[in-house]
Image 1 (tube, rainbow, N blue to C red):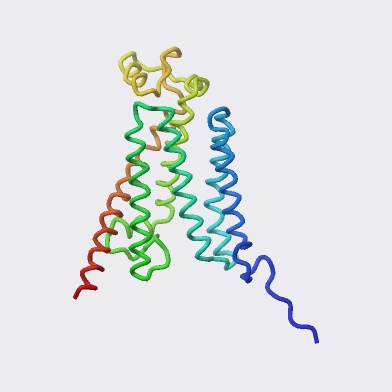
Image 2: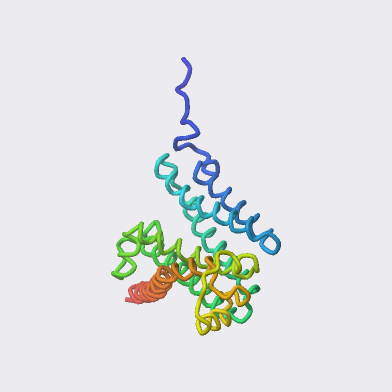
Amino acid sequence: MAGSPGPSFFERHDNVYLYVPNLIGYARIAFALYGFAVASTSPGAMVLSYALSFVCDELDGRFARMLNQTSTLGQVLDMVTDRVATSCLLATLCMLFPAWHLAFVVLLGLDIFSHWFQMYSTLACGVSSHKDTNSRSRVVRFYYQQRLFMGFCCVCCEVLYLCLYLLAWPQYRAWGVLPLPQTLLQLGGSAGVCSAEARGIPLVALVALAALPGVAVKQFVNVVQLGNAMTTLVQLDTAKRQ
């Protein structure tokens, strides 16, 4: 009698490398790599590729839960790709806007520090994911429990960074320009978001400004998360000595 067939490709099977969400994760890396490969010559292709990579970030988790193909490999792949893609984008902005490079470096460092400390502290406490919905910090707990709000803040960060990238290109600074008073135009021009030639603010800059509240919340959460994770690690060390 023939044995029963094994699990299908779209079920939980033995080859974790070929889980559907992990394949999506590999595609996400490919999109990001292509985007940064053409970042110095093709801004439209770069933004499109980065956006597709970001869409894959949303899809991999959905398919993991839908197909029961969650894995530690997938969780780490997801988080590391998040951090590396954002870091590469911020590094690109450092080159395009040298006057603002320190701000971008601080954002990059805060992002890495906060998430690495959070991941290590949750693992040390026996939690399987850095998205700790039972954190002792009410801010962190609320942030990870409200997935739509968390997603909004993450999208705002990526939108802001991509808009700043586009503003480094003259064709996007001249696209959809809205008139501004001369005083505001001079301030915007000094910040590199206004087109002095067109006497106004580009549509891309308006989108960037609209994303600022979500970005501010995300950075605030990063600071709180970093402090909370450091406190947790210190408390674990103290408990070991007792």
